[in-house]
Image 1 (cartoon, helix red, strand yellow):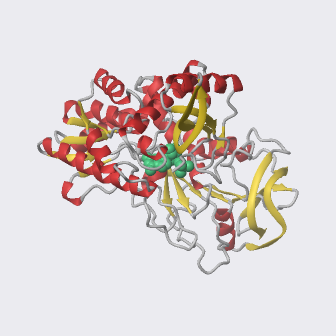
Image 2 (cartoon, protein in one colour):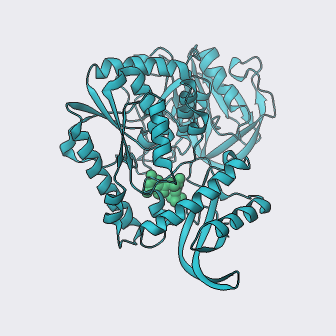
Length: 510
Ligand code: XMP
């Protein structure tokens, strides 16, 4: 790939953000751990070195050999990267005397420097480092300073090597994206030609080449990732893609039939397997959250495996794994961490399935998956669906699970979710759902005393599910929803709204 950017990861918490910003410029990039340079270095047109939790002076700090890169390709070194370049090329890096975290402003910019095109004095940059560059490396030319940091940016004479102490990838560095644009497009000459359409074209061609006339099995979940993966594969291999959509009996109300219909309307070769009874039987009496997850995972594999065996000569298993799941991050203790997360719902497939894995989305971030889906004209409603956990309503029914409880929760959830949609609130919320509590309370309906169940409603805003806050839904909406639930769902006499943030509360109650 001609316009590919390599990001060498030294373990910074911001490395993924660098990739995000580069992709936002419509430039393709890949993150690789510092100690595993990719074999196809010539495919990369420019290189970015990330920050790191290490000090360059530390014994265990990442000290990779950059002789294949430096001076040979345009190079942008960020934070630790900038210090690393200085430390090993005749400069001096020492502990800072002042705190250098958070906001700073550019107080000097070398005039007429292309690197700072469109960026003016005073521009806010974000710092996060405890070491500082005391003197520049051999050939270093100062490009910018801030109030506290004299050597905030430099370049190396006669090379396309640039180094910055601040983080252009964080939103708080106001002109960070412009700076990346200047470096990648103007200086390195990378073409911003990576768009969802170009991704679809290249991926479909690659999938055709890779898979040929083989058959592929894919587990659809009704979610965005598996659906977009299926549509891409369908474009490449048509009816040789065999999709399996399992009803575990813990989906939302009518979800199995409506999603199945939607998939069929999209021309996908999909088999709906209603295994509700098998799941609910296996779950009977289990009230431990992890126990429930284990049972659901096991039964899913059994059901999926039975179905996959019915597809004769299947050679591949397709998964909707996305980039955050596969990035090998560098652990703070040195060396790249070996842990690559497996896909939530298909993780741990048994060895005997012996299928080769194909993951067409594994280089995409979630919002890119949505953009790719949109470019293939997928239903916006499907692309905008809230995340829904693999174990479904099982982890929203606290305590043991019975068919009656599932059906109560499905009714409550449907009223809440449809209400959000009808009131134009659904797209303002990252995830929402109802939880059936193991609590009964006294109520009065007509002149009758009731002793019935209580449900909690939860709606959160978030960007990645790692942190979240409860959504300030209008009181009128909550009032109407609560009335509707209590009047229409038999067995429920009390509704509460969860106003806890994550942390400390998680999004799901189990
Ligand atoms: P928590 O509850 O950890 O949830 O704050 C964060 C996000 O992960 C989802 N979640 C799961 N998804 N299998 C899944 O596929 C699970 O076991 C699981 N548990 C939580 C949750 O819905 C939220 O989006």
